[in-house]
Image 1 (cartoon, rainbow, N blue to C red):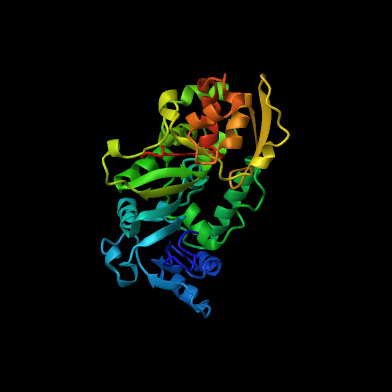
Image 2: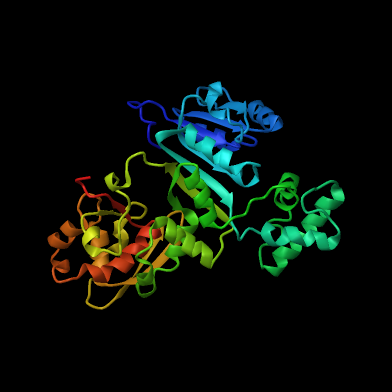
Length: 373
């Protein structure tokens, strides 16, 4: 985590909606020099978190706070902005999501990052909640033990019919049943809608675990060629429209203040000439996985491990992709890689672009802006 080395000031981390404080304690233990703050609207949750406090400088601070409160950024414990904010499973349940996202944006440093977890349109409650009316029950209020028991029964039926592991949802805690089955608010939206809300709050989309997973499962250049004109957020919304995700794990940053023409933006895969100055970078897997892959004129199948996305992803690609990945160190532009490798001397970059596009959106390959920018 940046900022944790002795020669740098400690980073500040906010866990928004910290519940029992487990996530805040885990971050504080892993990064002892980080200044960790946990907030939750529930006084009971904050009391539980504080009761688990451990001695030492790594202990998080906790405060009762409402994400929707317009005065939230002015609270004393939050006045100094944060380098990283984690807000998991909270924004789907707040009464004013616009206010919550706006506050999260204000709490970030200019180069900060927000990890936002929200319910998608494929969430089980989208189908389950309306069914309770057929049983004569209110799907927005768990009023007694009978309601909870019925909720568990319906979830168990859902598990069986959808071939989930029995008990995966139905054996969850009473608070889970209360919120995801009977809670008065459960905002389960398509990814495009969440991105629109984030943009309205001044947050810029950087990535999504679900999109990387879908792209990793679809590394077929002949299919991806039709998507080359789409930008990062458009690709994310496209895949989610095709198969609605249960949960979106979004990476967001403060929107850039500079004019669009002054920004590096993102690589344009629809324009080979514009793509050439960008610098490809392999970051999540080891290039040694390509050892033994012999470049040939015909397509070859390569299998990659993409941590956090897929255990293994197989890509059938032209030989030049193997060579590009071997040389993708983030220092050389794509143009320089083609010039420096004899294997690429006679190759046309256009034939490689669909595969590079798929690897980029699966998080196996990054593209750094041209060095002059």
